Image (cartoon, rainbow over all chains, first blue to last red; front, side):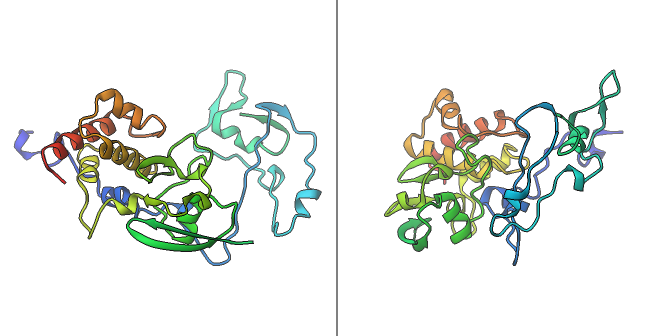
Length: 107
Length: 159
């Protein structure tokens, strides 16, 4: 194809949303505030690989204002964009996030 | 208990009744609704919350709001006036120095503080100025180029 026919290839293109991003107007999920919005906090395991024997929730549930506590038991499926498996067939990487909060914890 | 706070933000006098334990970042975002300043790590590692306070680029997540009494503060919202982008902002766009944009407000404020100090920074000085701002997507080269280019254009009288 002759070069003069190319509309985009080889030419710089301006980022459409750049203006919002350099002025601070771009809204991220973290910037959203809604009436009655709840806040969540993730508690990570202090160990990269460990067996979860039990999770003690009573004290946390009793805190004023706490609406819900979710653990791996509430989310019994895999999370993450990619499925990556080691040679032994054990799931690794983000797909293993589904293991968090129940059974074995493997980052 | 609430305490009062008076300071200037982006050229405007502001007044607030704040929790003494709230951070300056929290005050800017939740009281003044200036969501341009980001919270990345909340512990002074990432630089997403960088603002200019009394002429210095600082992590607003590490400063208590009460420490800003009588301070002169500039956030990313204060970089452009009347809808017109500043030279620094235009150079960031031109050099494609942003992708997701989450680090951009902090990068811009660190760069602005540097250029307010000197319009003839060395490459090392530019690197040092954004050393505490982490970017996870663009990479730093276009950002360094945008800042160097802004310095040159501002030296030549550009705004």
